[in-house]
Length: 405
Image (cartoon, rainbow, N blue to C red):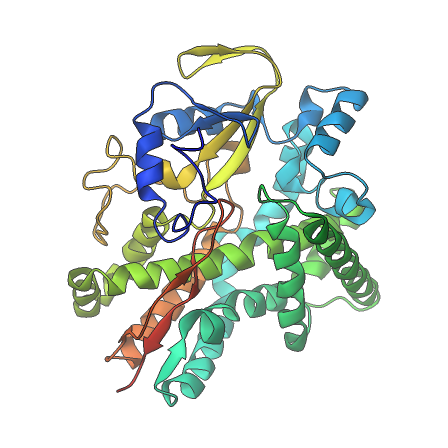
């Protein structure tokens, strides 16, 4: 498989699409040694697995305690007490009725209507940032702008002080990076220490809001805890996961989305001429370059799916980014089309684990891109773009721009 699919290869991060296309052309679900499971790359297969409730994120749905420990050690997720307590047991990693109960408790906080109350905060932050940056003329879009917005918005939602956002995002990056295939000892130590420090901060916030509630997510989740809808650890783990899942992926899709617009000048011109297309354009940016390309599932029982029989415990890799460029699912799949309808992509996943924060990500994108296109008529690329490596995330690490000539 290495010759067909090697996400560690130079250049994969910048242009993974030929490798995904080669996978889609292979029959069945190819086995990938480095992953220890089978890869689904076509839309039909990825959707079938993601929507099937017999497919689970966590091995607890089919394995006893001894087998769970073996799987945990094999993945190098052992000997990490804080990570095991708050990351490996988060809503993302559990299944069945426990997952459904927790999701129902949290979902009301993430409806489109509820999140609309953040519009004023996001707009003010973006306007203030652009006031400073446009005067500079040239910026790195990732480091100077995109890297800061999601952390500030999520911190405001949670109830943490604005000055804590940069540190929380660094902790989140340490935790998220450990989910990639390259799990070194150094990454493991950083993931555990960052989980510990983040948990301590949230414990302090929990105590403060228990004594004096405010209009923020922590206060609302404490009410859910007091009503018996969530345990104390679930409150801490869920708030931690919101930042883990929402900050890095939003940064990545902002960068890849803007890069796509700037390299498709006809689409950029169309959007400038008709700003009402922005919601459709944001949807297309997510499809065109999914920020979270890869997730896994286990077969919780012996089953038949994708035309084959699989034993209980089989591991599957779902290549969402590949499915979103599948020509069998999308006309001109490799072309950015901001008027694309319908646009039923998998950038937010599908099934029980579909991304809870998709409405928040869209809100951030729509506000930022509307303001940027309005205030930077000379917007253009201003040098070489650098991209993330590996399979866990897709997006630029450096996107140099000229804003005002």
